[in-house]
Image (tube, rainbow, N blue to C red; front, top):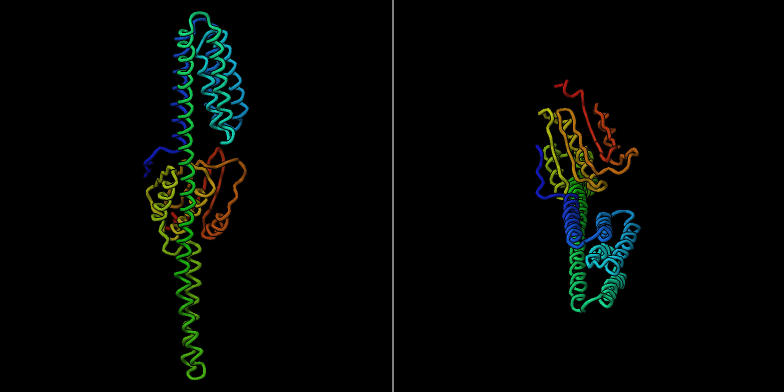
Length: 374
């Protein structure tokens, strides 16, 4: 049955943050244009500055950010100069305040302060020049241009800074999810190492004691030495078999438990999980053990190598299919640990297929003949 995520995914948070900030800047920019634009020239200049602000926000994390951002900065700065000095529009500071904040916050720390002060100096210089050359009283000019331009600029800075803070928060969530996934893989390795220690540590200790006893009795009680060595031989054989079972995840492996474990690991990493039972039948014990190992190996691969947001596991009476949306590229996937599993599945009469395409990675194991054997 499907699992309802406790929280929205990081991708949804990014989209939500971008939508809120993008919509807010659009609304404020449109309001400023409708209130302050008194002719076509002012409308065009303010609209151009707003477009530059929106593009810089939209390309915040794009691959060509700097080329786009510097172009937007040049456009918004020009709109500031023309809008304030030529068209008498204090609202022209809105675009450059958004774009400038975006640029400053993306710069390395050592460059932020000088670039920020340069942009402040640009706005202050343009507004001061307009105040000094404006006709009429100085008080009216100060009220209209200083207060108006500064207020509008502060609004733009606030919106762009909010976008940066939320984006940083989401990035930290993603890094935390990656660390959690690595911890989950490490815990699985520790669990495997603990099982291996339980099997071989006890056996080696007993073997050591029995060999020591046999050495003491080798000249005095040959029959007892033979019995001790027979027990050692038998114990070593049992340990080899248990180690093979552990390596193939057959030792105490339960498919239902593996499904629940995979669900918990994915949800801990912030991945939405949906588990479906397609036909209501349960696979037999031999098939279930193999399918559990396929599920475990696939879970580990997704946590370590994919950037998945959604995983769907579909279980039938004869197989399992695991689909995730974290695949990159279209080239044939490297099987890694699944290569050994494919050999085992085929020896047991099944098939293991791995496909990548359209951003999805599909792992499917099936034993079509098992249904007929029931």
